[in-house]
Image: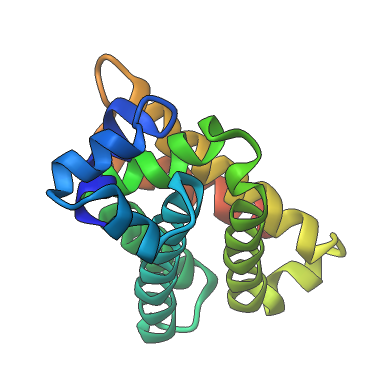
Length: 180
């Protein structure tokens, strides 16, 4: 798992062979196949671990925040961005390799988007209902916006600061969730 965490982040999933994984992990191909059915299964396990850890961090931050929309949004976004960017490998697996892997992670990615959208829906339920907009669609939109901000952070020649990312994400979330 550790070798895949690094190799799948860079050079990336498509460039990482089982032979290279096994060499880096110092295990035999047979040992690999005793644990995983293939590279795809290993990538899915890594992605799901990253998502589960991120969800736990964000959920805790939102639950501990004061119950205003601003405080919930700021706490959740700050927790997500800080946790995700604390390890570049996690950020790349969750936001770059999940898309580059093709159909391999389609279902895993969709489960992750759905889980984060539900979290946004729950945290903003009282506020979004007042706007009359579809909570699910608003939640999906803001989750997608945050993903794109992190992809930009990963690809940019001059990375925006984590604070700048958080400020922009908070702006998008609060405006989308109904704050005038």
